[in-house]
Image (cartoon, rainbow, N blue to C red; front, top):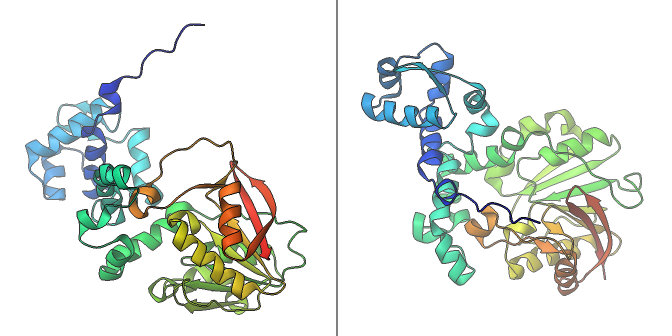
Length: 324
């Protein structure tokens, strides 16, 4: 069997193209072209840019297949460039919102690799969550990214025994409530509680409007005692944002609230024991971790929980725990 061709290092290490894409999105170039502004001089005026510099950026992107240049100095949207009009794409690339923080965080990768700790504060002055607290516009952009605008309507999931025996679910760290809203929409008998920071739950009414008569919001940290007595406590995409110590503390709060008969469900970030390791932005931003079933089982035990089921969900698992 012949060996595969070596990867092209020049392609793998190209930083010009992604930064040009970020710049074009931040300047709303695709929107201006879609509105009929196609000449480079007019585009420079509309975006407040230097004509030659903007031409260099768009010419580079056209050469890479992003935008078309049907005549010198005249630009058009091709199928690739049309994707930049999608709010779900744009929000993660706009350097003036959370996209700027995500892009800049990759420059801290050497610190993460050397220490296992995020270097975000060295780049931006504050750790990630404190940075959001200090910049409300940035926090709003982040909530939009992880909500329906950035990720669409979340898929519901199955649990052992079905949802019929669940009356009340608490979505712990549930952002602006997209997952909880979808669960309550699909399962009409459910009632729910959304728990997240006050600034985040304050943005939830529009998303929760359809199920507002069956949902309560609580603005607090999930490191504090949680509303108790619910049937199910959901941690969706939460534990993978945290190192082991903090993840165990979150699980412990869920275990305390779920006692004696509730369950804790972990969704996203848990893979098979033999799974392939990779790198994700939450690791670099926050020192978070994607865990195997065995690793989560250890965390759960330390938090007073026992793993009782692991149901496949795509390439990951829906992991259910009960108070030990």
